[in-house]
Length: 195
Image (cartoon, one colour):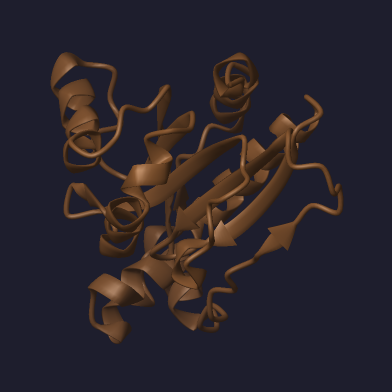
């Protein structure tokens, strides 16, 4: 049965390229506007951002979602959420660079940080400490009002970035994202985003 599953996985077509969605809310007022800036490695972070945005929009907050690669401007936002995939136990380089570039203005706003990762998923103390370490470099630059650590997914797209393409074809998809946990965390944010 395992060989059959691997065979079916290997026969599947290559995943399409990652699309980096950017969304600007149509509400004109800036006093309730929040920027969600994100960096993704293989696409898992995008789905997490969408769930966070949907949850926050239920609290009369207007969301602008921008990939960090677009170098979004921060001026005029009530708060900023910054999320990144984790690779080699750190945020992606473009996410860290975004924080460094915008450090002055970010330190005047409520800032929320979140990570999407595939390792250290346990509830034991070692896993918790390892997860916390993902943000050590960022915490040196900012004092976030909240942090979130969410399990990601690993599929052929992610495998193709790490393994030879012939071997990546045999990797079955693994999705550890806990949508209930992500929504509950996002529900806790609105009081922290007030100025």
